[in-house]
Image (cartoon, rainbow, N blue to C red; front, side, top):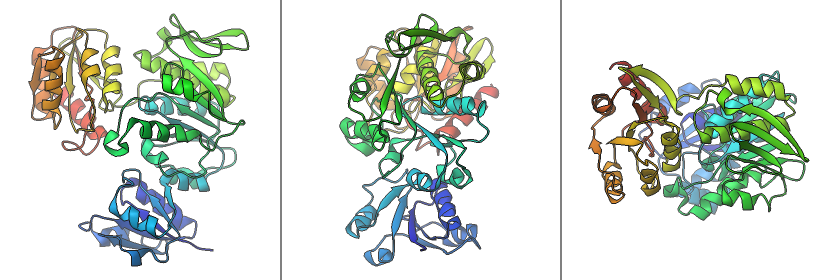
Length: 448
């Protein structure tokens, strides 16, 4: 029987979810609280695709009387006023990934964590593509899961990057293998407390049983403890401890210790990825691929061929003996710490942006003499500058836009230096997304 489904949010996720719902013979009401949107343009996008209508502005009780389900886009907080209207009306709320999972087939491998998700998801996808015939790489990486769900088959493999926002409203979402790479403070403007944020990240395992696997970072004390409480089989990786069982770094060699046997997998010197955090991402991807029964020779070749994803410690260019790196995806202090650590030498840093209620002290301390100057942009620049001063770092300059920031860096850089965009903040306010911020940075570098 056909259902009437309210899709909340008219962005990329909402559009993809609406199309899936229409293709499965159900009715869509696309809702957005922004009453300034062009209703006719939205209707035109779905002309001839099924029973589709648009609702803008305030959601009222009478608007939901025939609604069977709401699918909410990840960018919308559950504190939004219309959500309480749905709750009062006992309307179930699904995330976009829950809707996709409901319709998808084949095996699902899902990756979450504060940092490293995109790199690990992209790498895992490349490994899977080298062995399986039909592979989909979806989720927070840029392609909505709902866009690909109906293309999946019983023999296909889906690798999904999953954010905390997407996990808030799952019901029976259950990957064959899940992975939680790390948990550090982020999005506390939405999740309010660290405890709440941790619980949401850990919920990726909530429907897994003893037939499923969860890959966890042994070096994260929260995840190490969590591995003792889950129903799924826990598989650990570590870049700091040689594990009796699991994947770890022993000198420059990534190894697997399993059932008393030691297996040398790949040397980090063979990788094209910089930094210890990326070695952890590689170990997580290998662990997922092994559970997916991909042969080790296939895994090793894919890992050694893999280059950094766009906007994550991405080499841009060398200008006048100075190397420029784009880490626009470093949208929180912990991610930015990893990027600074990955730079091989003296660094000039571009940072700042939208305030997600982050603290910056640990990030500033991680400079440890490597960062010579910091050029700050955006809403957080005074907050970061004050924090830097408390930590004794005073080589701080302001810029009004990215072009000015890049020019300032170029003028202060010496031959052999590195210029790094790693903002430790979200892009909103100055840019529509981190991709736009990174693209503008790269354009400014190339125009030097």
